[in-house]
Image (tube, rainbow, N blue to C red; front, side, top):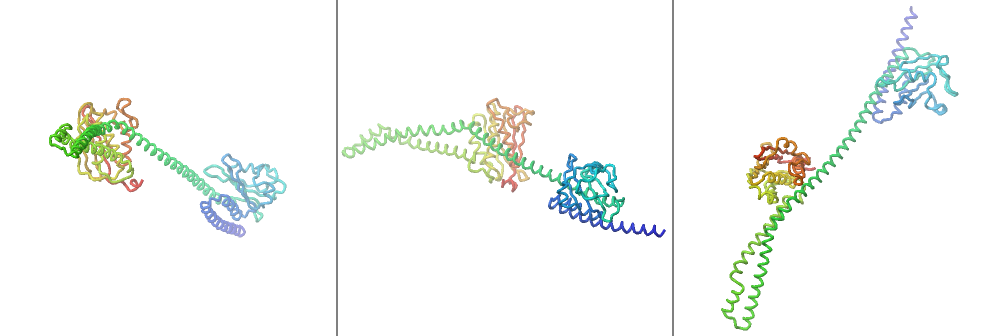
Length: 479
């Protein structure tokens, strides 16, 4: 009875020591896990693992075989076998006999007489002599990913269930580490994919912005091309009568110079008579020339000023030198745009301006003017004979301003309103519209943090309402 009691005490003492050793080993392996995450050195981690397991289990030889996805032995880590032997035998055993049996087994195998085991095929020449062997699978996410081997206990005893339990507890911790590592690797791979997708999206967005800019410029050039004839007509009128006036002025100057020359000759001959001077005046129609020359000069100055105004309006409309965010007066932009598109509107509609108290807003002026032009030209095109285009502006309470362009045209069908801002959609006849004007206008307004709405009724007219923020967010204004 006393011997049995003492045997139990010895067993408990031994078990207690092994649990203390297990606790220390687990702590050390968790520290190694932290190093693994920091360094990514998998080789060192697994080599330290087999060394720690050798100390914990008191085994002379310990090995860890890890399998690839297709089940083949991928790497092999050992303790107790010197480099010379590994070099001679090969670092990756072929898995014949017992090894083959244990490779494929999802269960723990304990063999205390290797030579007598029916699956044993013996060791290759020069292999260390081994009698006992315990093999245990390393399972990660329910898949056998490796096998742990321990052979020859240092105290010469056989492997038993207590050894199996201690080794299993240690391996469970390694399995959890492997699962966490695989999860982290998966996350890392997904992060790489996300970064690649993010870079691709950024590149795509950059290309879209580039294409949108090209479309904007293309539409602007197309719009200017459409307006060129009208602008040319507007310029030709003053240029035409300036040219006519210059021809008349040329004749008048010749007559006046002839008059002065004749008077000079008569003066030199000292035979100047009042009737001679009078006759000369009558010959050149001096009184008419005197009166008409002032009118010609006045008309010519007016014509030059008109041309100057048209050119200035074109410059104000396009803002060719100002493609950056800046504070802009909306009413000035509308007025300059109206002058540029005047030839498109004046034969179709009367323009009514009802401007409210609107502050300057932060915007890219040339782009906003492009929107005004598209809305005004579309309004004019919707009027078949004669009508009105009313432009209203105002300020909202939420630091935004609004611009309404209302026409008395033919209106838009309800089924077409939802498509108005789609690229290449147009209700105009073939050859009279690109279908880009409203689409690009929508993009411009969106870029400015605003919105555009449409209200239309067939045969009564259409109202476009544009809402824009007074001040842009800092990151937007800096971009």
